[in-house]
Length: 185
Image 1 (cartoon, rainbow, N blue to C red):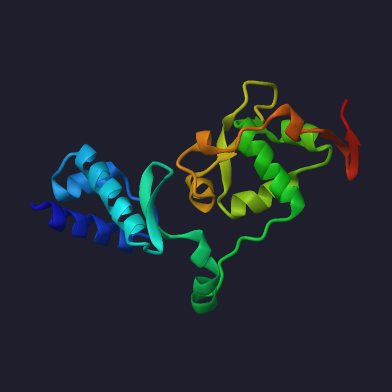
Image 2: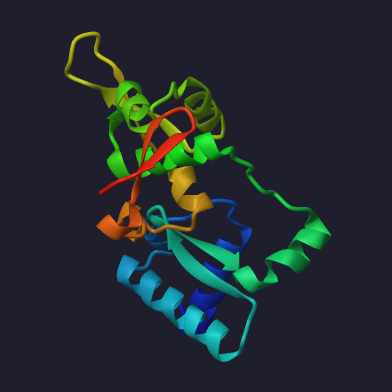
């Protein structure tokens, strides 16, 4: 198969996909090596960039997805409607704790937040941003929570290593329960 034909087929697969498609799956369908798939994806991205196209192919959660560039989000939203996931502050804090501390139990989340996390956990599970990933080897065998592939997709992350690094100066406060916040130091 010629390079142009392979490019067109890979682009068509990614255009039609609603979720990330692995290089392995594409290579199996097209009978080529994974390295070849990745090389072609890189070439396509270079072409998109050089020709100022409004989209890119991004590696997300172990697969590839054709995405529009963020600067076109508003105009696309006007046409097809916005699909924003609205999270409360409690759910966002809970999600941040889980994403950085996973696997983590509800009790550990409650201790960090200083309040009960049942509601935010339920919301995050319902939105498929987190899931039960196991049980802690402790009395009562509490459930452990972690993020999902959908979490990576929603936040356009290749993997959890792409989460921003948290530095000490980023955490100048601690939660002591409810809305009580105090400065550290």
